[in-house]
Length: 193
Image (tube, rainbow, N blue to C red; front, side, top):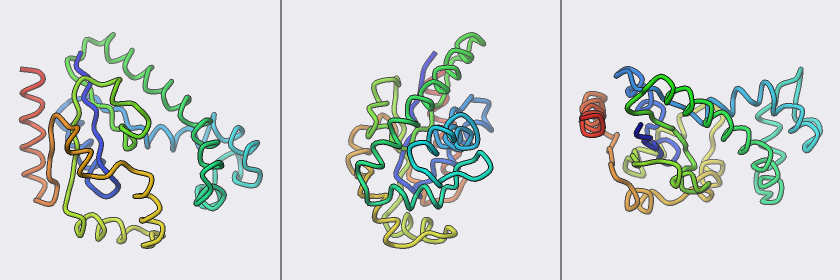
């Protein structure tokens, strides 16, 4: 089974690309989706214990949690120490289930692939990218996003140029969806041949 790591900085098209893999019948594990599930379940009491007042009705309030950790490296490190092992455990279950089904190829969509050392757990790496102006426009169109918040997120992420230099495959997502879909089909063909 080949494990393809899908990554890219915020606003580069990871979610859209991941959905295109799913549409082609390739199982995809999303670290972001795992975090969302965990924030509504197993992680909530652990986060509340570490960051009192950041949950409501047994679910993490992402706005309150963001306020509690933004610009505070120690707090962010503490949060990551709680959430990363739980996310990794979900990823391991996903991999085990895919292997048991005899999948030839799976995708693990991990935004912080390089930042967390997860590139060591994949066979190949796909980086989705777009020009900086396209990225900024996409992200700043999101509800609640500000230039300062975007800059803080980007400061924590490996620069796009470095990600591209470390990739086995690169897809520029500035083009229409058909171009991205064709590139994804080509990668699937190469890896499942």
